[in-house]
Image (cartoon, rainbow, N blue to C red; front, side):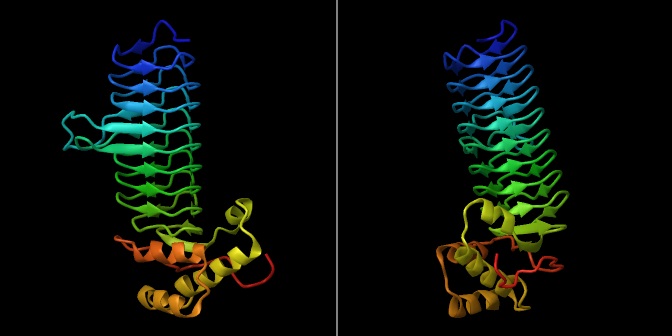
Length: 267
């Protein structure tokens, strides 16, 4: 059902069962997939693909121009997967150069006034809480949680199962499986998140050992990585953590001010 006040571009493609509310705008060359609901006053920009079974709430803007002085109106894209919830006044902007794109995966939750800037890559099952802001070219991996009013610098990576606590900020990569607080400071393993996602004691224990060596040992990161390769049981999870840290181009969050025990007591 499309409300008669909606403004739908003649070049847009809308699946037959899409619900489009009052004063919605759907721009040129966009596509909205089956089962999606777009509520009143929301905007879907040009060159934007919305997958199936998404819910776009009142006043949200998906696929609008990037906030970049160098953008000149060229064709760039926003691609949104399936099953996402985009709440009131959240914004997702398209790529900032011709032929580039912002990509959002499946089953993500973008809360009120959160922002995904141009050229970001957002994975699956991610929560971006109210007021959280991703600058351009940020990569957020699966099942990360970015809490309220967090700010993330451009070109940063946030690893899978990572959690940024509310009001925190980072200009360094946030390691997977960890909790980050304050200014790019790693506080602990995300034990609650790991358990909720089915990590057993053996997987968690291996990550604890790696975490302690990387962030608690007092070694510089290069030496800590070498020691981890030499002494630890390198499970798939630990390998992913080590490779993530090695791949950091803007540095990785450090371990100052840790507040949670990661000893080997029974989980």
